[in-house]
Amino acid sequence: MRELSAQLGYAKLTDSVRSVVKELVDSGNVELIYPERLNRPDQKIRLTRAS
Image (cartoon, rainbow, N blue to C red; front, top):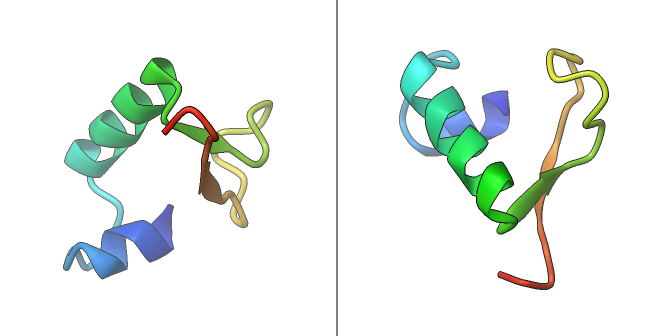
């Protein structure tokens, strides 16, 4: 998620970015690579087929 924050112009992961990612995950548009460990350092986000 740090990569996403950087691409959006944030110096670090903010609550705003976390909130938006949570909304996207809840809606099914994206999924976490490691859903069981949200704070995993190498956590990644990928688009789902539904999006």
